[in-house]
Length: 572
Image (cartoon, rainbow, N blue to C red; front, side, top):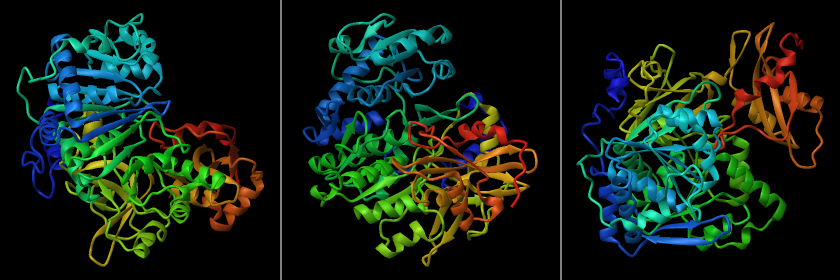
């Protein structure tokens, strides 16, 4: 990675990857590789169930730890012998949630190969860019997406082999068939070359709204140490079961509900997709304690409950809490969800660049304290930093700001879970590590509790801040007001170019089914809570909101809908 990093950035990166003065070379927690961890777990609890996979037809398949290890070893042998892969090589994986995908990930890590997950929702140009930028040597592809990879192949000179995963027979464009061939290879695997947990593990490409995506490079230690932080914070034990309803091409699904259970010796349930139709039944049937979600999924569950009123029929006595992050959670959604289901949301925050999670609400809060941090500051708190990272609020010059809602600045993180850097992007690395911390690009503030614990809040993306007449406005604050209007399902504040103020405030509104709310009524109700300068001047109605694969709203993609008002002057 260092060949893609300017010399003057390396000390700053090293500082950003240190935890309270402890450099990343002084590792914490498990210090073997992911392959070592799986071998140890399978040896200790061979018959214990690790993975349950539900397909689109709700049919379940199961892997014990020993069965999963054997499948991983066979796949790793196949990769090494049939494909000639070696530690340091990179493979693309273009697939939806599937047990085969989990096997391929762990097989690559057992071999020391880097996984490059390709989001099936990316456009063809970005699919080609990702495989080319990551210098992928092989691509593992499910039949549904094979044509897209074949089309991109000519733009990826390093791509030697396209491996079809799934399907009855080899389809045009594929060179090899994973399912038909891997059975010929040994179920016991030893890497042909030794490596340790500083080996590259995964390159996750960010889904930015503009420009080429950036590859976030994480090594095996990044994954292991962040998983250790997650399991310790959430007090996960070998008797517990987690469930994955998020796409496993993203670090949230990969880390929280695939790697973390192996570390604590628990079990996990992987679902092809998410649906409110079966969600609570599956939580009951599988005795789930913790589910990792994004706010969008909470909204879907709440919407379904408001229609069907059937939540109370399920036995959820073993369920503990939701882990929720990876997107903006509003005070209103959090309050409605917790008041409806009486199940706590452990709100958290993190980025691919910080491996996954960096902070969570504490589990030891009383119900009253939990509600306070979720509701009383205008934004739900994202919680307190977990080991192995620390956090701060910086001004633009990199100075730490004091506590308090009036001291907003950029959320910054440093610790052992910080990425190795953006792959082949020295410009981006110089910017994001400028002050010896990782600069998140998110605006926020911090408030201390009676114990002196720092509770952080996120108020918006700095690039999404609406700068009207030189004054910064957080879109999240306006979102809260819009979403609270009766009949509004989703309300997003959008800054758009304006001749008179540089930017003006618009609102993109998705109404609830059957609701009829006028533009004038929305603007009137918004004005009751917000000053004129901060209130939406233009309302655009729509049916859908562009989102990333993890449910984050892509607010900047809505800006063009307000282009007709660039030369309009709005007066109070």
